[in-house]
Length: 132
Image: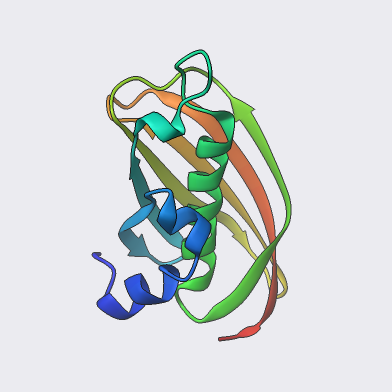
């Protein structure tokens, strides 16, 4: 479902991701789809998308998926695998919860380009602090 204005406003406070262009496209139970339109500032010296851009978008998608329903979840550990260079002008990250425990959760975030090619996969373990 489309995120409510309240959800969008809350996550705009995630300033690094927001100021780099990350937006929320969709949310569902322990799920988020976020995207980012690529600009020159997202490229490295070789003209490819900087690795940190993939990770920032994936981390933002994890934050939305794990927190939009009222939990306060922080990342304990994240690991990224770069699988290929993104093509086109947009990145899309989908965060899916694979394990939702009492105090921890495990998420897989796939970052794809606008053509559906997987560019990176991130696995993140989150720790639930409290309700927002």
